[in-house]
Length: 202
Image (tube, rainbow, N blue to C red; front, side, top):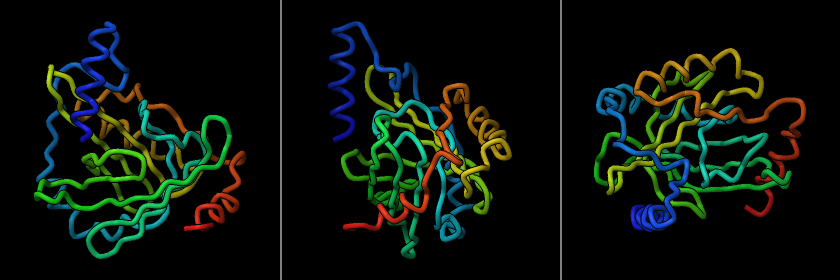
């Protein structure tokens, strides 16, 4: 379904002579997914727990803009996802979904959040305890692709300490790390209130 929607976007964009900034010419970069998958699969359970989003590339499907806190609960195979944060207008918003292995056996995960589209997800680099660099890329017709990058950390104040880890990981596959936009975290965020909000009515 996502491919059909993106195809429609590309056709409409071509007619208007405008391409959305998350759609890029060329194909997805080469990533040694088999190596990463083999190394990470036995350790997927370590990826569970709470993460804070510190940066991401332009992503029209990520409606959480500030104070983004994400909880991954490992179920033995994949993860239940609970994300909470503030919208660009300052309203609280929560999103839920799943991260699971690709059903056809591709060597990466698949993320499927409510009100979005299933998409591949690669953990490019992580030490499980401090930082994680995530990447998603989809090829489409007309020699275009869309890709999204995320920099997560275990604490709200870890941006400067681990930022270079993800910059190196993204640059290493040819993704321009200058596309990353810092996510506001820290003293302006009421995390206890957000944590309470995400569990209300779930």
